Length: 417
Image (tube, rainbow, N blue to C red; front, side, top):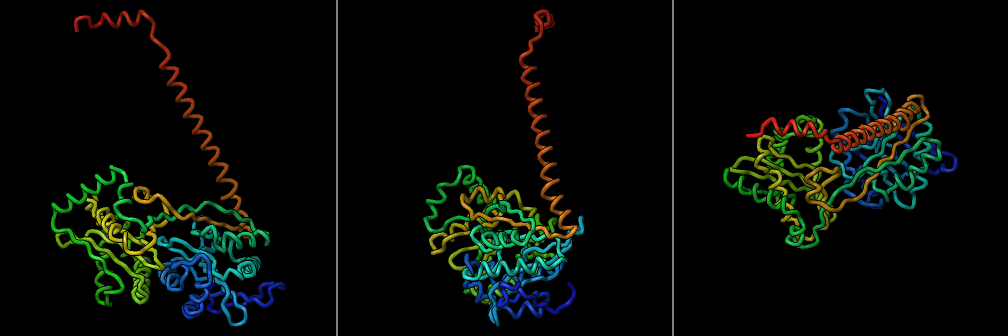
């Protein structure tokens, strides 16, 4: 949609008091901050990832590949619901997809509304989407299982005759910080502790090891700019450079700079930097919110992988977070090897995908929910048969002994050797 004019829609006869509108431009989106955050204070669960500042920063990244397409619900002049969507075209299949406004650093996302209004708001949004033929798939990711999308919106979409599929969305892993560091570290594997000791020894041999933490309570604009430039430089030399998600890329840099300005003003910001011999080799970028730490970015210079500066920084910053009154340190979604070494727990996440009644929507449902699973089952069955056949052949081969005359002739070949 290329117009900046929002189009108000009635949410259906049974919801005549609720008006749904599309927000498609910065001029409409940015002024919503105050009432948006007032709504977030009523929503459950509460999260920094629901706040307007977060979505505005995420939009600084996603504007490069998407169009803004938020749905907001009002009762009179009061904002009572937000479905923060963007619109993009899936390049391979040309399907138009609505999805939640997220970035790789997002840890949780949801439809926003007060608990008392959840069924009315979700039904109004489902009705609006039912009248909209411009989209083919609706993808809602990073969802908490006790949130509005999973508990109400998915059911509302089904009532409006959409094909809806709910899936496991992984876990947002965390380390509990309420105990003592020593007690926690004792639960880690001997292999991990040995690796940490080796990393510390290697780094000390290269020069003085220094770890600095920059936070909102002792930082000004110039200090923030210097820390960001250092962090961006480290990220530009990390393995993430090849993924397009390093902080020197236009989208991620726009996101991190926008977020940092907001986080500094609101006492959310923490940036850790590790230097060896004065050279910055590793960084971590965090947000602090309501007693929890959310680690968004952890980068290290790829050329230094053998001396493990990132692992050394992580171990020491985690130790310093214990005993500070904080509750949890969140590492983000994904079963990365380093997360599994440090975290034993995680908040469950879910994903909901809905398919519109358009031709492309039906084709997408057929491709994603019927053909691909069938091909996957066939592949798995064939692979299982191949493995079973191979194992059977190996057992048969091991049971077959050569005839006695072969043993005798073999033994006479080298009688004196």
